[in-house]
Image (cartoon, rainbow, N blue to C red; front, top):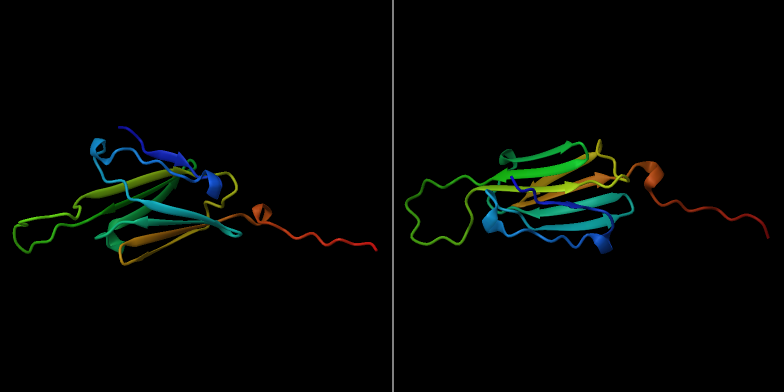
Length: 131
């Protein structure tokens, strides 16, 4: 199976190119990535995915987000522009993030994942002494 995997490094290098969704057995959710002094923030657009149908895993430095939209039982659709099915997106985590301190929140179909940098990777201000 083809993998849609990119490395997250710095904001200027985080221009993520997605593979064509038609070739995947799942939908690739669009994501916005930002870097803060404390770590990385990833915002996945997964409309229709409920918190209980989303999953985040980290394995060997790869962050994987999956989600499933359940079909509605209210009749036969006459026309549909929304997607029904599975979402999946993978990223290779950079070395300067703390995979042990990842938090996530789902709100209105947007999954926000926060990945903290370890203390030694955070910017530090150095006091200058002398005259």
